[in-house]
Picture 1 (tube, rainbow, N blue to C red):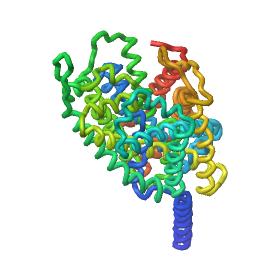
Picture 2: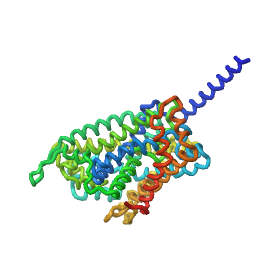
Picture 3: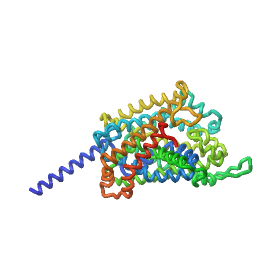
Picture 4: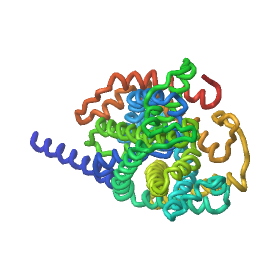
Length: 489
């Protein structure tokens, strides 16, 4: 009798495991931890690392910003990244439905988390189209045109060309997502990410070898630029400036590790139950931080050599206006370096954009039980429609307005409005409510149990508990108050 009962229990468990495996395969999953790490790192390594990181480092004391960023990465970043991946794997759901499955009363967080990538995708594809335009221009031997006054402005204000490049970029990302998790996202990430890393390292090394002599007779080298990047500049540092640096680093970390936008929840849902999640999250964190650091090594010395500290503070125009002039100043090798650079940026844009698209597509699949093809086509068409609106915001529907984060003397357009709503308002709200849900409602042990389910050791367990319950919510609320203009340092 006991033997018969054991056999029944064994068969029951086997059936349950079989059903679980079949559901996982039907839904899609990463083939292994390497595929997950590369895909997640690819999502994290995006356009923000290329233009925003160097600009903030130049503005906030060079090495001081770097130190603050690294501290936040291993504390704040680790906490949010681990939490979102754990939510995804535990629920096996995308952001739209994961929160509700985790806790019924938290279901309202899902639509907000899903709204973030839905809003980001259209304007990210527009910027991806700009990158594609520059890459094609360099590839076809027309590098000199990019340094002409008004080239960038003339391109983005054109009525049709930006839309064409946006469509091409979006179509490429849609094809990847249409192919699925294993055959699309994982396969592309395994090819693109190693190539991207090689390009970043190669350009960074070359950047350090640059040298330029000004008309004053002063000779500046790439190593001088590296010192500006690495050595903390504490001159005139006040509490207000330090807090500004902390908030800048915190905001950059949001973009850098792709949290609070549903991506890591979606990717976490594709991670198998036997994957060492602690190890994978640590690898993602290291990969992203290394690439963010190398992006600074790649850009800051080069720009410093030819444009000084002022050239590093150009923001988004750094990539499309300042850097082409730097490539031109390099001489005959400039067009080649420029082509490699924009190829690298294009790869970074693609890996990020496809993860943003997947966050929405997976949500449509889980919520409405649509097939992947249908969900991909519908979301791509919606993204395209809004992307056209963003493109027309620079010509037919051009207007100027001010947002709380608009620099003095600047103005905001439709793209800036989309970016402000998604990144400065909705993302902090998602992150704050996630911390409250895990830290105070469900308790941190919910995440701890999930990431250690196979006997893994969570080395930063106490740090995680303190961060998710106390420090992270306070930092996030401060960031939100600054974003809406209520708090200023």
